[in-house]
Image (cartoon, rainbow, N blue to C red; front, side, top):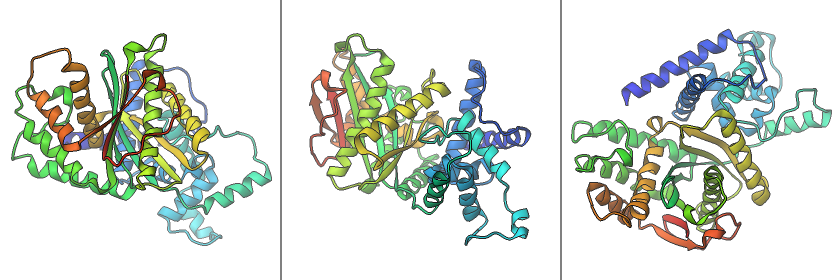
Length: 401
């Protein structure tokens, strides 16, 4: 984990160095090769991870933190500038002295960082494309009102997909319903890993597929998973799966996109009915990065989810960020992987194969701990906007078969 943290820190330093050498640009840029795309996504992951860890050492980290917290700053550099001054320079009131103007971070630097974060890394994207010409007077007044608007409460969803080549395509997820608890639980999880490194073998990354079939890491996997479940006042587990063999003429990417949205919609309904969340709310949707996810696909998926949410919830439930990230950088994605991997083992592997090993024991242990409630639906309902069946379970699996 120390090596990974150093790698994240080094990448953030590279981002800052690049920023100092670049001119501000709002263009999307030319098509880039796969190697360059990989490098950019790695830096985007590092920036995201450092922001979620609360680091504000560099200008991109500071600007990214503001963009993450305040949606209105994503489409107005002036609003971003004022939020930045208020947060990092303790600016108060409505007027600024000439002396402070020399001391405070300048608009050009902040705008350049914002452009790099949004256009190159596809993080904290605005809800609508921003027009490049001068805004009308009434729009400027609206921006001023938004500046003093309180931020929406934030919840986090960490997801992982599995079973792409099997009968059931499954997306499993960990939900953390409170932003403050998200940081607290993450810190306790990191602390648990540090405290137990000498007690039993702990992998650098918890991954169901890499779990040894002889079970020599069973104690670590159980302890890791139990640590999260034990802090269950603001967490839940939700999964969605569809028998893709029964779907004809639908691309795998379309199925995946639908599952990610339906998981978000049904899961939110579930938490609202249980009284665990109240609207309005905004969501950070973090998933395990797939090999073929480029920046264009990330931007398209972000907009699709936002459009679908708006059609159902208006402005009461918003997507703050959709971030595919390398699971090595995010422990909560690893928790989601253990959950989805356990479901995959039970629904895709066990019905076809009789041999059993420690992976089956781990999967059965996870299901026993969570007491996952399975809600079954017809396979042709997987795209429909129906109401979720009300229940009070901490863990739910929406299965379309």
